[in-house]
Image 1 (tube, helix red, strand yellow):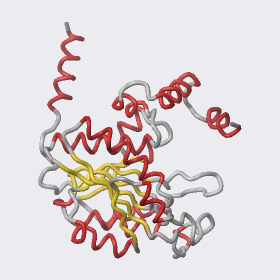
Image 2 (spheres, rainbow, N blue to C red; image 1 turned 180 degrees about the vertical axis):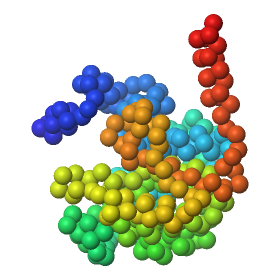
Image 3 (tube, rainbow, N blue to C red; image 1 turned 90 degrees about the horizontal axis):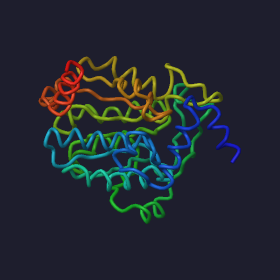
Length: 281
């Protein structure tokens, strides 16, 4: 209870908005789409990315896409993601597959200061694979060293194109390796992929910075790729529709993807034209 009130006090939103969101979340009020829009769900960042990935896939007429989580730990994220996927599949004519990558034995040994060993140590977040498999209904677990599993993923699993990636690997070294998945080629991805990085904010003990951890891995990826970039979701940042998580959601853009320039904005442009007519009338 103490933490609940402290969290409310330190949130930048008005109390009425916080309480309204919690009530909507607790009683599943409003449609799933509306709850995604206002972040009134468990792991709203997962719901947003899954929803938007499926929306984009439908616009581009992809019948099936894949969702990837790097760093599953106890598996709570996968359990919640499965529930979100079930709701999203009701809204779009797209099937969604879920893959969870994890070492299984907990965090490996930190390589150097870039892995923030002052905050993370080997063995944290160990997975109970047997128990987790009992809870999961549709997830395929990909267990092993990220260097190996990322390299073999597309050949071994033949997944549908990836539209959404959740990265919760904690370390710079592991995140750096996971981003190599993006180099597999455009046939394996949507032209824009929704991504969530769990470890780029931290707290006042961790003290995240741009020269370690996931932030450094993202920066180096962008530096090493001239036509593929991982960028902020600026609309989400401005709209503040998902409190606390807006700056942690990024979009992978593959400017060389053969479908990057496909026009998908009919609905948006009709909406804007109607608004202009109403204002001018």
